[in-house]
Length: 186
Ligand code: ADP
Ligand code: ZN
Image 1 (tube, protein in one colour):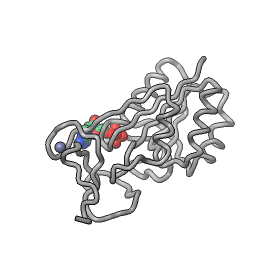
Image 2: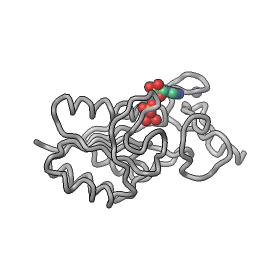
Image 3: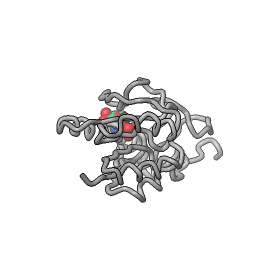
């Protein structure tokens, strides 16, 4: 079968994990064998599954980086038809050639990740993954200020670190008009 790269992007709370889980569950209904991975930076909820904010889960293996993902995947690769990757923004750039390699082997790869950081910058390997994708789904959340469709992830409070783990109370979905980058510098 021809391979396929599907990328699901959007801000936090836009339903990326939910959509990834939905697609993986349907693949399993079609009796395809699925392997799912996430970076170990994402500590929310579970270490052995991916979870959405609405509590759906799917079994997943936590890996430290792209090389570890490759090592975990290749021994079982012949029996795997679909590869899911959540929080793909946290992987290193080597994820891009790995995904391209897998698609040439006829695999379906479905990745979910943030397209922008909390300062509205492109996030890690996501732009490059979008460039090689067969299909990109850009989801919106609901703006927590005004209720309009939200494309931004607003960080609340003072931290300037790129990665603050956890969601509720730390991040909020915001529309373009309500988004305030560099909150504490002005
Ligand atoms: P993502 O992976 O994009 O962060 P999830 O799939 O984990 O999103 O969660 C999506 C779910 O989050 C929605 O179905 C809804 O139940 C919940 N949710 C909480 N806050 C919001 C919001 N501001 N906009 C949309 N959904 C929200
Ligand atoms: Zn708004």
